[in-house]
Length: 439
Image (tube, rainbow, N blue to C red; front, side, top):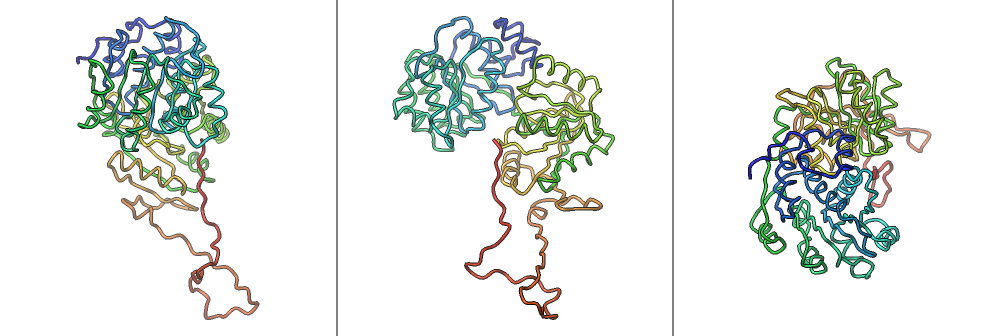
């Protein structure tokens, strides 16, 4: 399908509240998948979208769905929803739900997320009140179906996002079980980064005469980006970030955090260190967002600290650096983040601060991008920076051995300078790192 000839969102004929929300979020030009998918979805067609995270596909399916909800206002069905979006992970589900909230503007829709790993109570109450949009992971949704607190007979729109990842996680049977609960008459949207035979066969089961759109993978935007990873203790990240800004070439920098509160804290720390910075996220008012983007675009502030969702509408060609203050929990978000630099034919740099507890996230990013990112070890460093190291050498750098006093008051002089003995079986080892995940 050829690109739809639109250079702004007004040509789609979207409801006025949606156009207002797009302007507030800073969306200006449709991405290729939005330009191709939105016109077909506005006509009620089923759709297969081949696209990766970071191509703008969430808005590609959310905008036409929200337009139809605005045009046909009716009470949300008790125990169910008018729109069902299935996603493979709780992180992606949360991102999709937040996008729906941001884009829905003044429509006052009831939107909720259902996923595992948290108590059932709040989810059951949200379902009981009725929802316009339900974003869910398959496993927890089936729990609610089995408990008969969720009813899907009123679903008008079904979206399956990241289908290839859902199948990799073994969700094929849960998907089929959920689909059996849906009415036959509905509009179906099916998104996947790849389309092997088994996924195409599933699409054949679920979709009726679909239109197919495909876009170039977002990873291509990383080709002109110079990547680096700095290993640093979590407690020293703010100091390291301030140190990075000693580089005068960092003139227009996007800094990413995982949470809204984290974005505010980082922006405050930069300001206190003399670096003009401001934060942008979903809790900011329209006026605050517009002022923050205007100051950043005009060069009045060097740093814009953002969460992933807030940054989706930022389209500024002259971003010199992207700094991942915290690594994203979804590897694909790394590709989207670094795509904010190296735009309009320019080069760019992406710097990621990685503490011990983020190593698994870094490995996931390297697997996705198929790049072994250059690394610098600054853990506990107080002095000149060591030279970058490639590969896993930096990851496996040996920890410093700290010699502790012997319990005996008379220490054997021959033991001085020898490494501490390894603990015997059953002896408790101290200072074992614990996993910290900020949601």
